[in-house]
Image 1 (cartoon, one colour):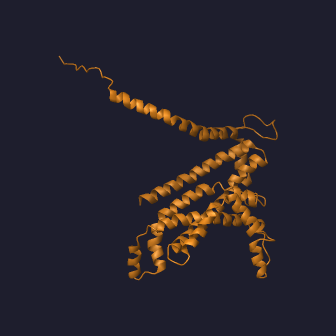
Image 2 (cartoon, rainbow, N blue to C red):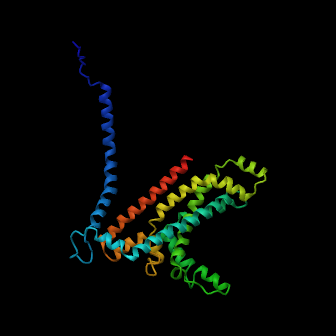
Length: 306
């Protein structure tokens, strides 16, 4: 007959009890932070999803009940929505092109030795510490005002007629203002990255007869590729939500010429009092931001693997 092995009962050893106690203690200590994170992030998201399928207008309390996808349909078929998406893409793309392009050149320049380099570095980084609202007021009233702005005085000094920049070129002016704000960030990151470049490579290239342009294209730029990718990712996440500069300077106008997706949601909620439509816009903005973030994270991961 086959013998059946009889295993003795497993005893609960002290080490196992101690491990379970540590895990329980860790969960108890972490639970307040987890609960706070849930309340801070999940609850507003659920409330936004709830209101996005409801008829809810702050001015007309008779608009109540379940709306289904009507809020989304109204938003997606609204011409202002497509205009805001286009303006968002132009704003993000223009600021990235200026901040990354000019930031790379300034980082290369400020890495070289020249008189007053320390002061120049401080001046180029200082705009990053100015609050967006203050920066917008500075450009609107001090620099770009058609009557007493600095640019208007410069144009009159050479016999030209001053331009009302915010009325004639609202989106381009916003790109300039926001790029001025974010250029120091790009310079700071890229300057830090370029300082880690091995100088022996540049010396060897110089001895082989490579000029400054060839060194920049073949040595400096490949070395900065990872830092540039990180700058693009971080700036894009923040640029998708630009609001203060638009609110202070153009208020989304003329018409919707400078309205991005974030300002469109604001106008639906607090100017038109349509909470349901604004919540639907918020959900769409979350989807768009996550799609963009997924592509950026994948690009960063590929760049880090190389």
